[in-house]
Image (cartoon, rainbow, N blue to C red; front, side, top):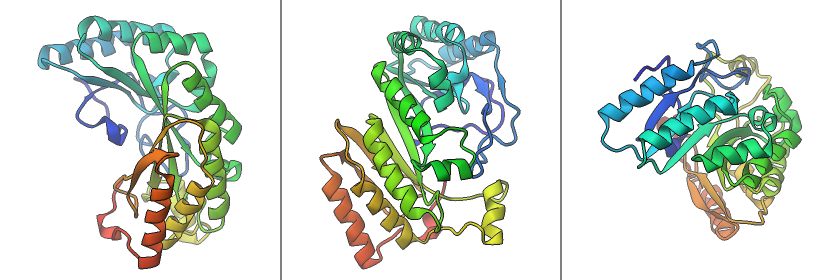
Length: 289
């Protein structure tokens, strides 16, 4: 297998085969993210991807899952993605699912028929980083997509029979915009009706533009108590019409939450209220990206 630079994958895609079909992220401008800053974006030649898959086939007797990386592998045309998916279907008959990172722009460029084609040929889930439901916050972090575009993209994924897994980041609005970030994110979750929603908590590394704003005092990072209050307000405004698997149990989170919306909403709200009442939060020493 050939890998370039650091390899990133969603937390739920541990211990699986990861294949880079792109190098880096085509957007790569989000002010908080350092994942692909050292990489110059490019699409790998399809023959290289197929060669890596063949290498994996010779090495591993069983491959249950395959994740297509890097940052937005969905940027590939369907013609190229279909060659890769067909190769997986032919050579990894035991593979239970294929998943991929995508941006809202990637999704919106594809027709409903193209997404259905991908689903029918094995693509089960698309991971999208929404970060916030607030247009102000999205603009501030240079997300490159609006609230309306993110909602449309997720609804489009789900309408094609593909599962959407959407990530939001607690604290993304800072102290100045925490209420707007919480409320708008909660209502966005309600409108999206994604199959999966996960929450991370903001942790900023030194080599990103947001770090300079933190150092200058322009952006104030929330405390553990403030993050919990923000999460509580967010959940109170999240009212979904269908089952949504909800996770806030990433290593970055101060209060681990795990449940399904809407059934477990009250339980998770009570967990947050307990944490706030008893100052029961993960120590910063044990938080990590």
